[in-house]
Length: 151
Picture (cartoon, rainbow, N blue to C red):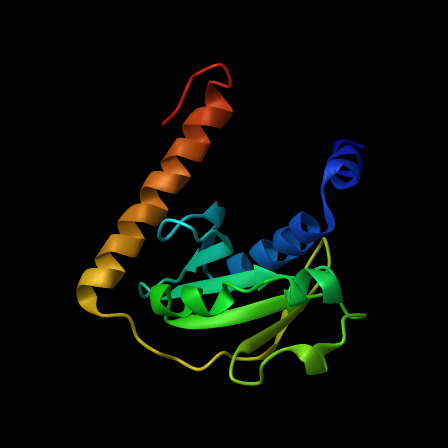
């Protein structure tokens, strides 16, 4: 039952992110949600692979959600690969072909098209791994101590 309650409280994009994160874990990637790589940007899912790969996944729950996103190209400089995650009913022909494509639901996902690789420079990779680690640690600390005021 707790899973059903969580499922009911989550927004459509969060449900897609959950399925994406579950699938990426099966590929040995760890994930965080809603990471801010730079001021004015917030990625839905950032994944860190076993060899230090950095992937960004934007979850779009509808055509309107996709069409309202004017920042997505700004995410490309913060990752090695970029993906869209949508559900099976989404009109995938709207998505740029030069990006990855993941079909997801609340429970799992499948990579249909691998995003092209554009390796991060060493300094940018180090900065992103540090942001990833701090973000994950702050989320964990907030979960352990919900009343704590975090930065």
